[in-house]
Length: 203
Image 1 (tube, rainbow, N blue to C red):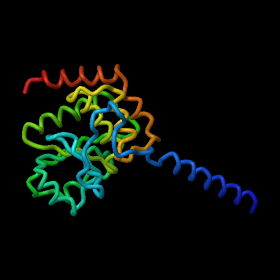
Image 2: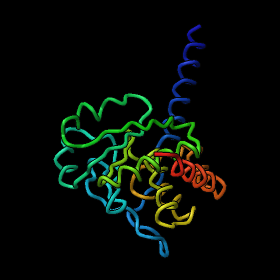
Image 3: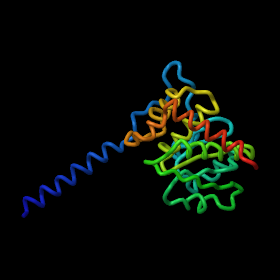
């Protein structure tokens, strides 16, 4: 019996190590390769906070120490992409003059329609000022939405946006192959179609 238990424990340990290895962030570089548009500008390494453009920032889950910085950046809206534990923004940012929105994305099951709905929320809130998007790490779901934003609003190619998400200094986890797989011309076409439908709805 002792041998069976030891084998079971060893098997469990090996499985845990394998999963841990799969979940490690992609190899990251600080600057894009030649010919690639400039990646997001780092604002705070501790908060994984980066400036995408004048109206959009990206980060990990904000904490109390980040509030003053977000206010100094004139962030007017925060879009939370977390599916679980969505109350963190309320605890930290309530009554700070920042509008809070939950747009939950389940990391392993994201559709082009959900991407379009998120982009539509961002563009609507940008009419009021600067927007911050975040998930937990600020790497995977946030990387997807920032990448699609690059394609739809900034004219990046699919490969340029995917390359920034995977290899930029944000900590993308290669285990989320489904997120990488969303970066195709067909999925981008679907995002554009859904986005146009949302824009054409009666206000």
